[in-house]
Figure 1 (cartoon, helix red, strand yellow):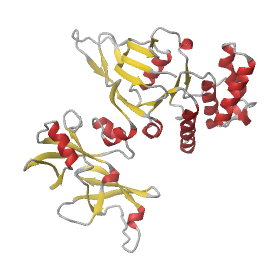
Figure 2 (tube, one colour):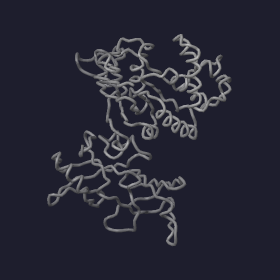
Figure 3 (cartoon, helix red, strand yellow):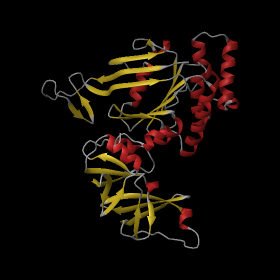
Figure 4 (cartoon, one colour):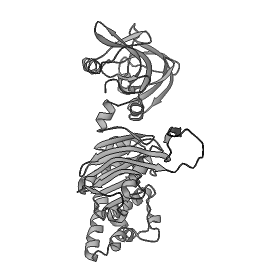
Length: 394
């Protein structure tokens, strides 16, 4: 049982560059802020994690997610702020005394040891009684479905089996907090899907709090109770998978969460007869009542905006005055759906069309170079400030 609290956590790496700058003036390099202290890899990170919660840190490479995880593990010093586990400050506590376990991307198994010996090793270091070691190892092996591989060495196992062993070696310790650093990134797509399901089953069987790091937003959406989206060392949004999908806080989150990513258009937010509408390409789209209320509450003024619409929320229709027009560049068959890449409004727009919608007596065929018309409703649009990228409804 463990509650984890990260309060104003900061990580600063020394700046090896000697570039001169004015005193007190921050710099930007590789999108990370540089101060007199050094390069800010993680800035003012605040997160409260409940007991047995599954938290996923997600973001592009270099955003600070693995650095944050390593600070929780004690593998990186904390430059500022406080890390508390069950109310106890852990900043200066040795990793072995934090009651945590970590699963690495590279498995980190001992090649000269069998599966059983790998899993027993952390318990033998604690000088645990043999019968307790056997109980824990056998139980973990059964939970992970690796009982039949206990006498093999890592080189005789597949990638998925090695990852199960690495997870087993972590859970036999029965840690308060289980940390996972991109554990599935070395697996192929089919194995990743299988292992995601295994991790979901695992979290129901053990009493640990999970902190999981990935750059794959599909993993984040399927595994996390809550997702922490990071960019350049700064938290962009914290929320449930559905919250961040339905109500992205800014343009970065909107573009990062969702496959394929959200479409963005240059548009105008206007107000006529006290009602907001969006205008683009000669088309006016009325905003839903819920969004009208949010914009009114925030006192949003008519302005140039970035309009976001997810590919699955765009509908193909016959030609008409209130339709947007575009030309199909590429058609990708995905089985149950077709992903159309369309040039419209000077941008690449992705439209998802269900294949069943193209079948039947009025079967439609879509080919490259074809002109099409499409539209979307005012209940599915996302409105972002063109300068700051902030969601105008937030």
